[in-house]
Image (cartoon, rainbow, N blue to C red; front, side):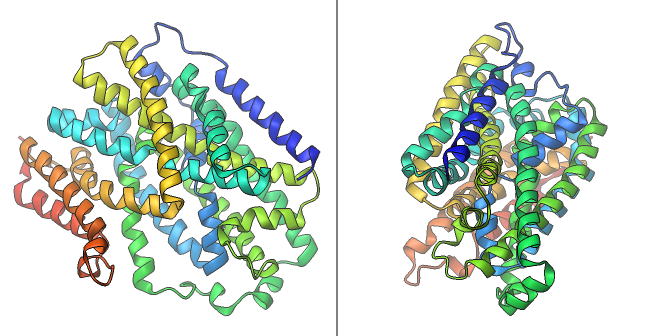
Length: 457
């Protein structure tokens, strides 16, 4: 990158700070204004915020496309579209009509306080943005020449500092800008690639044959597992938060439908870019760097800086959203419930939660050094514990008694954690029964539900 490229990145970072700090929260702002922006999220803002928040794993998509080709769409695309569609059809309207602020409030309303607190702890850990702060560290290394730790520190700072001032509204305002940058950068990259090298004929003539198959060389069972993992969408806090914040139930449902189309378009752009990277850089030692390496190979000065913004914006939009989700869970649903805080104290607790979540994210990023490992760990343990109690709190008339809901959540959480750690106890280093931890957890949770759920009167 040259001086002009660095200048573009610098201007973007300053602009994001100014946009984020614009319209600070009043000192007497309610908890609803801080967490949900006063429930005034319009359809365009809903779509921009949800799309940009839910697509932070851009380097992982580049890695998978580079290694396995178009099967990226069947692994990281289609299962999540289906899960999002299911959310839109069965949960979006009910979430908005509930008038709640957070997921734990629904757990408390349906079950009891201890179930809600348990759910709050799980959600706090699941929303710590460790995987995305890790990616900021990697981008700092690859594009800006920074050390990994410096990239983590600066990326975290620029992603969350304005959230202290504006809460959810600051997150949404910056998401709108970052949504546009996501699409512009990849559109420019693809136009240059196609004009210089050719389109589908060029790719089909030069890619390994398996890259153009639906499986990419992986087993059907491996791909099927991702359709179960995608069920995490049904307990995805960013979906619930935006549905709670929407102006109306119609905005929430329609917004998810439109978002699915945006994700499909963006997946087409990113998967195709990954295929070009595989052809033009066949000996890349670290496929996670495929997008930055491809951009440095083909983009001129200025446009390289623009594409750097695309990658940064895609990740930063997820960091600020998840950091704020973790912080608001900590402030409103954990400390706020334990100490019965008012609006002022909950805001103070949330700011403490923001510092805690960001610090833990940086530590997890340094410890794991793999975004996929982070997603796998927290998704495999948290999803099966939350999914059944939360889903059936909104859907159907059969509900678990409060005691059984608490028992289900805790027992499944412990089972999934122990199962996740089981490779450390086996000679072959594999999970017990060769099963991913999400499966036994979901099975036990469903058994408890069908045995003990009762028809509401």
